Length: 250
Image 1: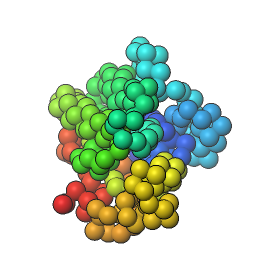
Image 2: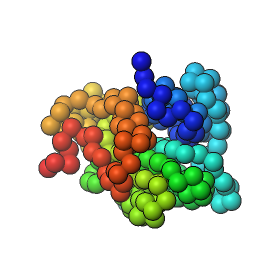
Image 3: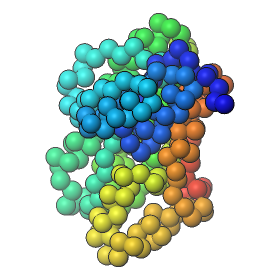
Image 4: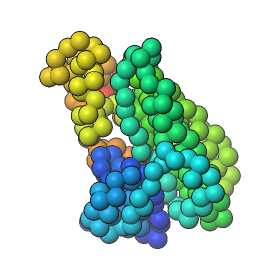
């Protein structure tokens, strides 16, 4: 039986209707938290929230100006929402770059900003940023994603330093390629820019840097998020936890 160690806590998970986000939402709900599933897809958000007994928040997090005056009464915030585009810098669409920076760096800042007053008032809070091995390492053809994830690392560390005296921790989780729709959607683009067949992308591109030759599973990421949200991780802050099969050991 799962310990209800998050009972009474309220969690917000962005991009919570699928992939890593839904796995995190499910993990928190199973441990007693009330979970708000934030997602752009209204049907998916409501379906996910209903499945875990939580709440849905249908929101376009790339509309960052709408978040300027937001106030969040949550105890756990998971910044997970993101997209991926694969293209050489010289061909990378500027509008897409700006979109990804808004969604994956600006909106996490604004959500942290909106959540901290409540966390500070209660003397307890958990900020969990779903970064990536690409928050610590670079790959070609992913300029916006790598830039945003590197920025998220900095945001997380500053939040840790400011939040520590108030009982608020802030950490990053840095997985390698996770078996999610986001990863599956980029296979065709990876094949195009690298000039290889689609059926060779996982082995020759996604797993080339890892010692463990498989994709990460969403529930593995969620299990680490669950521990970071617990009281047992109260002294863990400002850290970047790799779950990358040895990628960043190189």
